[in-house]
Amino acid sequence: MKTRIKELRFKENLTQVELAEKVGVRRETIVFLEKGKYNPSLKLAYDISKVFHLKIEEVFILD
Image (cartoon, rainbow, N blue to C red; front, side, top):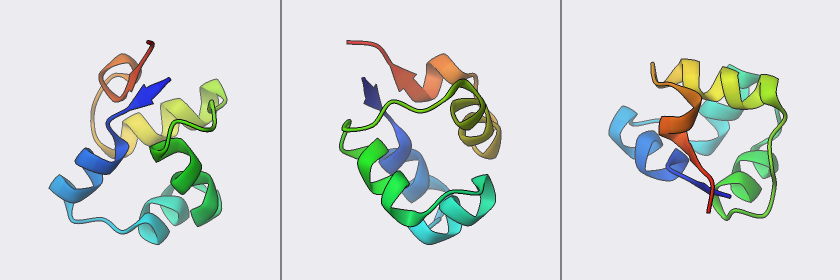
């Protein structure tokens, strides 16, 4: 699964730590998500998309 998390983080001027704190996960989880090495739970995907004010499918792209 591809994500736009890194791109969106830069647009919002958020660090990995700040995003992790906002959604209640560790920074490493954000790292793995950005690298496409971790598929988030539906709740985590929803929480991340909410931070960026986007729909889940606008943040996470199935390949």
